[in-house]
Image (tube, rainbow, N blue to C red; front, side):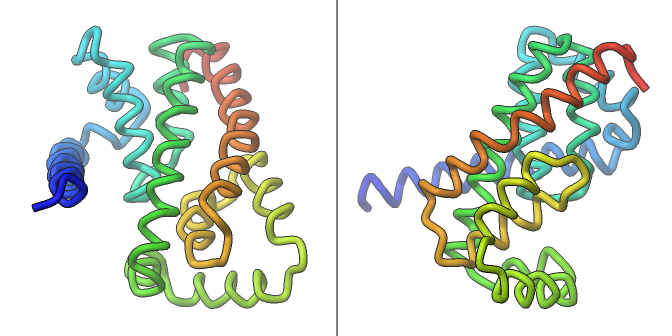
Length: 189
């Protein structure tokens, strides 16, 4: 077995463990409110920032909870700066993973995660758009844009990973920063 296959197998195994771990917490009611997620993350002590980064990455890959929930928890637990970095790193990593998963597994994966109507609506729109890249960037900057879907959807286009990564790294911080500052000032919801 090659090093690449072993690495991929280990990565898949770790992802599956993390998914099971987070799914168990989700089913146990740990992610139903900012307070319950905050208590859950705080239990990990010094590892809490790493756990928040992983939760934020997985919430993009497996979109079951809104990203702003993790942003709120990060800002409340770690302040606007610490919360921003945990959320930015996690959401950026998750976005890149979602893009790569869509590149590798195609339309079937995207349609198994999101409703077919949503896929058809946006594929028609993107097909007509001459400036998909600009619209994607603006969408990443703005709050309440369906980011998770567009990370997967972009993986189905001819867009290269490098271009997508630049869009994420330059576009995502603004919305996350706004959430981090707002939630840190509120001290919670």
